[in-house]
Length: 350
Image 1: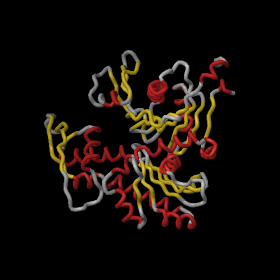
Image 2: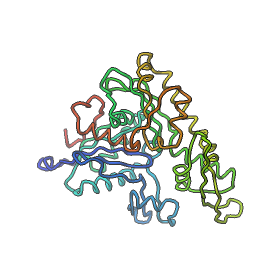
Image 3: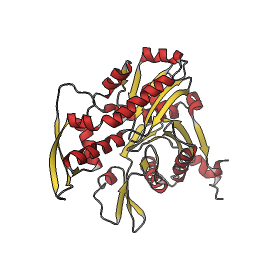
Image 4: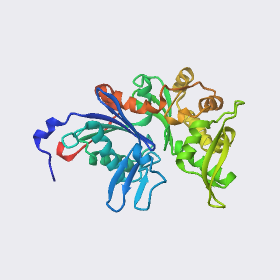
């Protein structure tokens, strides 16, 4: 087996924290903060078998490529769906932020869903190592989110965090550096987009793309009726005539479209609360529930959860970046947070 020369070990300097999300990948570099925030998308030339673009440039190609080019998301439901594409994407992102890929073999901390299987965890480690990391640690997303918010996870008090990403919703009660109770479901932002696509197809016989559904969700999506009504134009292909068509949808219609995935998330929250020890339930009553992830930005979601649980719900500042900030803080304070890490080393480091 190939072994790296001993002198190369002294050139290993970069330390990175990665939030490898279904929709977005964010990278934090030690002593520098967040250095990358790009879509988890890769465009591949099938003929040459080489990546043409990753991140922002690749996302522009989604649904618009000729036959010889594929633009796709290599992550699905918070886990790896295409190992080789994830490897290409991570290698490109790591190269971009380290600027010296040939000599840099970074130490990497990466967040993963709390409900990930051992096989899925091994796939994440292998993909990061194959992308060039010399040492890989995994940390559960809800713990990273809690650290990113600034919650005292080391204390014997309960902290409840709900992280709604693109592929998974992570619900956890955390105390003494560990997850006491957790529920992880693969219903999150992507399923909301799919629900909008299905609704528009059923009601208007119009086929829209993922990007269009996501834009509608962001611009006029809501889950609580407050007397206001917003409308938005949406373009797609008429399923009856095959001709491009424009329609206008309302925020009330989008609320109806989102009812099922949002109900699944609320049910999962109730399940997590039912599983929580009584002693920690008292802490949750006092502190409330903290909402993180891109899904936390859905209008009215915090109010709906408050209504359904009777508990205070607080949306974190800049919720999209809570996980990467948390993984970054763990990277900066490894000695303090060592208990929350799972570690992998490459053979040449033995």
